[in-house]
Amino acid sequence: MTLIQKLAVAYALLFFGVVAIGYVPAFNDPGGNLFGLFSLQWYDDLLHAFSGVWALAAAFTSHRQAVFYFKLFGSVYLFDGVLGLVTGSGCLDGGIFINGFRSLDDIEFPARFFANLPHLVIGGFAVYVGFWLSKRVHDHFATA
Image 1 (cartoon, helix red, strand yellow):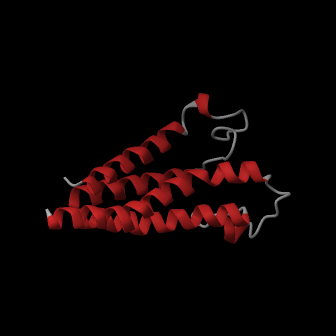
Image 2 (image 1 turned 45 degrees about the vertical axis):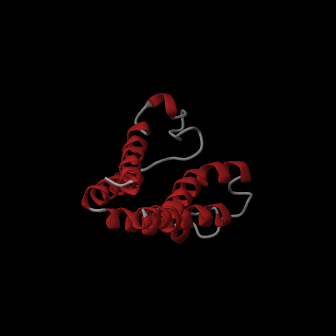
Image 3 (image 1 turned 60 degrees about the vertical axis):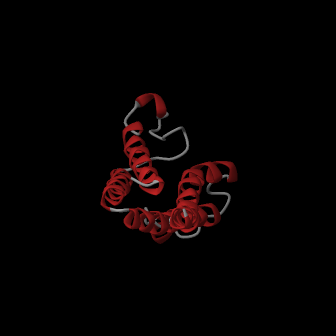
């Protein structure tokens, strides 16, 4: 199993953990917001679970599929995080279509930043793995 495939397994575990942590009362405030920042709905859990299953399937299928996962998944998640940061609404939960562009008055910037930080970090690292690290790892093994 290559490094990229192992990272895909780690992503699968991460997403399964995200789904599970949403059901731990200690991490939810009285309003049902995870870490006091955002509310996760059933469709968010479905999306996170699907992301984990896809990562796991890609990891155990091939190095090439794991790279494809990181490229496509990372691009979409990073875009969602940037869109959420700029507009206050993401695309993966349909928020941009339902709520449109939200002003800074609707969501204060620190909350907007921290609500989108997971997608920015997870998506950004996945883009790094898919587009840069996978090429360096491939080039290293091709010349070794």
